[in-house]
Length: 354
Image (cartoon, rainbow, N blue to C red; front, side, top):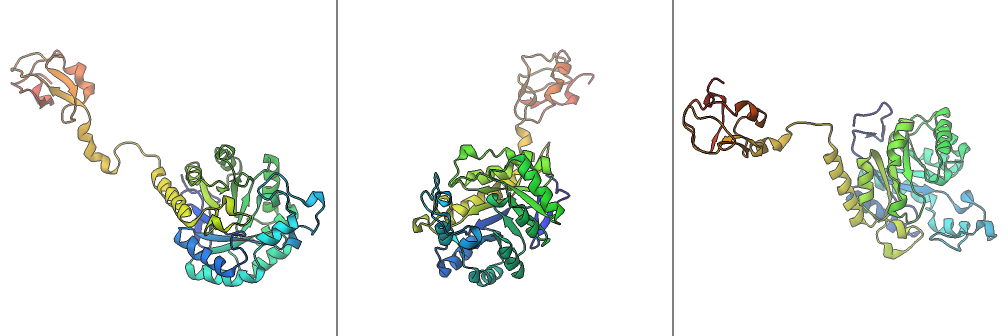
């Protein structure tokens, strides 16, 4: 697939069709409020093949209010019964960790950016000079926040979980009108974890065609094959939650990959990239040595000069050293120009008057 006009770079890494898939490890709350664990996550993500580590920048108070009223209680998800404030308190990353973690990421040559959930987080991250911003699916409808992020001029990765086509159009228009030109749209299923049958990966093709933007996948399944399938359908960015061990628990543990799983995912993606190649017909690479195994015209019975070629002494068989099979009807009925032993590949000089 040829690079698009809207191709751009994040921290020097080209993003778009025709370039290696940009793979993001989402830390979220998988540090368990232990800085040493957060630091280990960065090292493990780099070793597993990630291009970037992503945080989420918020506090419970920037996300919601402290209330146990029914409206603020969670139902029907992995966090059933908890209040929003309580969940976000557990899953948040201390803001004072961002700078030292960014320094670790820089040393590892691992891109470091985050999802801001309010304007103060946008300003804070801008001060850290992050190379990009991620916008979560749930914030796609927060148009004032989208304008603030777009105004920074930094690349934006926008998740589209739950969004209608009209909502995506509105979000993209809002970002563009506010100065955001470098944009990737991620197909996302906002279930935690998400079942494979609810992924609808073919949406990636439609999303790219409608908006003429690079597309990708924010994946909440535990399947390493799904991101690879997304790449085959045109995904340029893959985002996957990352944890040292699901046994440690935590709000996002149930839909996060462990390092060996993440590595398998990266390997699958890189293999798919190689296999996709480009549009190519004819003999390719090592196929040349297999041409001999094609079929061709062979004399299959001893023939004397002047004897007529017939189906009993001339056949289309392997290997491919004789004349092309397209000439079978042309040769049948003609005479041999000389004696021809059984097993001889047919050539024009063996045919009288050819």
